[in-house]
Amino acid sequence: MDKLETIPLEAISIPEDHIRVQSVGEKELKKLSESILLAGLLVRIIVRPVGKEKYELVDGERRLRAYRMLFDKEGQKWIGIPAIVQEISPKEAIRRQVVINENRKDLTPFEKCKGFKLAWETGYFQSFRELGAVVGKSHTTVSRAINVFEVLPPEVVNAFESGKIKQTHLRYFSKLKNREVKRQLYRVITRDNLNSADTRELANRLDERWLSGDRELLLQIAEKDEGIKDLLGDEIDISDLVNKSKCTVTYPNLTRFKKLIGLLYKMVNSGAFGTTVSQSMK
Image (cartoon, rainbow, N blue to C red; front, top):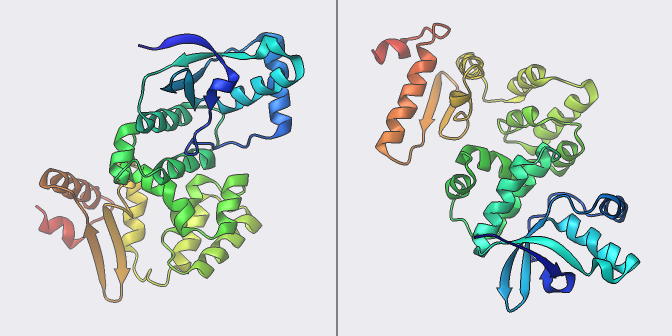
């Protein structure tokens, strides 16, 4: 059961693997400390006990640092901070941090992606699927978030962080294997302020493997169905090659395989994609 306590600031430490997705700058801390001074702490921090009268922070780093700033400036009145004490493991603490970040309205898409990356780097999770399961997200969502930092050139990541490139643009970079081609796509997006549809069209032209219209049509169909869209590029990979098209299906078990086949059938049998594939599946 959670406990509500006022804990001495010196008893709380910030663990090395704490998920920090927002900058903790002096200016922001000063503004927050002034708000706390006027209105008090509106949301308690969350900590977990790690020894006799010792605690580790789970959530509320900026609030904790603002309190420490008030203590340095105002004195003993601010020596203790209101906190929720939870008896949880280090892994559960990381899970809570990711869930809290996912539900925060003030975080940018980049910061939420960064949260998944930092959670993965703790080593507590054996797969993207496990990490996704403990925070209530699909493993596709997790892998896409982490791949932002793994497969994109630094300038693209920086543009995503600053908001010059939207999250809807990022999926089209994954189609391009060559990093210089990705940089070319980035330069045109920022120069011409391309929307998602224009970015997709340009990515298709830049993809040297794109030699037929089948994959493009499948993507257009998938855009109308979130369940299908989330699978493309991960569990279902459709690529166009010279004189043939290739579909690769990755599945963890037969139940999942049947579901994937059903989704593929839904695409090809949608009325917008009339090929011999739909005939062969009847």
